[in-house]
Length: 375
Length: 265
Ligand SMILES: Nc1ncnc2c1ncn2[C@@H]1O[C@H](COP(=O)(O)OP(=O)(O)OP(=O)(O)O)[C@@H](O)[C@H]1O
Ligand SMILES: [Mg+2]
Image 1: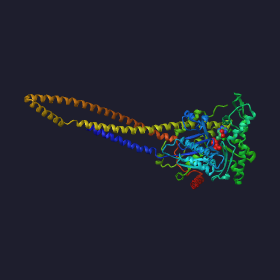
Image 2: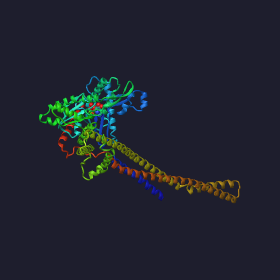
Image 3: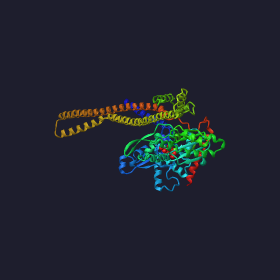
Image 4: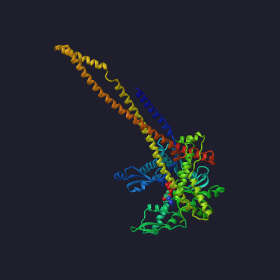
């Protein structure tokens, strides 16, 4: 009898302990919030999160072309770098164009089914980005997404729709604004964001930038690639190269410095790998983006309060993947000296994460009640 | 080319030093100490300080390096350290997952232990009850009356009948005893097995609880390291407090308007 009693006690205490630990467990996972800043770019998507996660990957979504590819890849969808590696067996989508979802505007050139497919791809891309934040399943996800300043209502709607499923509360914010906010530059400054499809310029003056504060140029990384390719076809007609090879070379060697080691690539000539000097072509192509940028800067400066024009000219921030060209900030400053009578340009600390970092800062600074109202 | 100013190992040591120097605490702990805002160490700022100090030192010594090259190198180093930290984050996630599994395991063990204990109790009470002596007596009585009836009908001497009866009784007793012994042995083995299982389950439960306890204790430090404690909203001591509040309010209003527009359509 005594043993039975003792066992009963133990049984009770063990169930007791399991209950206690359950309530302790739920306190452990007490509903937390993960803040995320997202830069949904044409060529790259970057996220910076309050839990320390930082990710950046090409804005690409790929679906297996056929049953065989599907079997081989063993998945329905691939993202980012994997898409580049497996592009031959995939239908590839780059769902963002000039920073907005392709076909989400009033562009009549995009067929309805193509717009639909891009929308799906964009939604999956956003989901993928949020998944990579590794937020605990029961936490709330609050996300600020940077969108091009001039994105239309329909574009913004499409972004909201894409985000809805995976984000508990989402705020859309002008991308150049978030870059500036992240650098703690809120007033009397010009932000240049050199992306793939476009270069965006934005004037900061202590309130939200409006249409007249922004200029979008078609001159971005893509144009630079086209220019470099054109120059090389002219000077080295015997060489065969693909666009991807051009991009790779640019991302490794881009420079506008007058003094630099020769830029050599090994590309095929009649099927034989051959070393080619592309120094001049690289510099010329890289330099080609400067004049249109400075011209646009000039316009934004000239239409500003004359008293503050000088301050503005001397407070130019340079960001975006395309700003990683060596010596670019100095070269733009010099060109401004020549054509605008002076200028000071500094590069943001992390060109690729500047937008996401700023968006994260905004999301954390945003009062919690705003987030709740928008969820 | 002059060798790298900041070697990888130096940068790594710096990173570890900063990390090691950071106080580990929980948000709850901070609240208890009455702290509402905390300053978070920003690696970008640290990076800039390092770049500056390297540049200044080199300039003072009259070594003229290409500034942007130094910046590039230092930035590269920092980014790779941050990437390393991401790997660490992966480990943290794995640990957290393990913690979840441990907790699950623990509650499964507890349930099993409950079940085994109940089984043990049932087995014990059924063995205690046993076959009642009354039943055996009744059986004996029935056999005796039948023996007497048949033997007297056949004209057997009562003395002989008595002998037969005592023989039958002895045989029956014998049989019952072996039967009882057997079932008692079976019961006992069963009970012993159950008891051993219970002991083992208890031991496992204890171990799991211990591991879980340790995972929890570690978890505090790990979680603190992997993220930063966020105190949402613009900080009151921010020199741009007013401007930022204004701007954030504007972003909010624009987003509310956007939703209203969409709801109308
Ligand atoms: N080292 C480099 N030198 C020059 N260009 C580079 C370098 N690294 C990346 N780029 C270019 O930067 C561009 C991508 O920049 P970014 O990631 O900021 O674009 P995005 O934000 O996706 O585009 P957008 O802002 O137009 O939506 C690409 O054209 C890429 O080739
Ligand atoms: Mg961009």
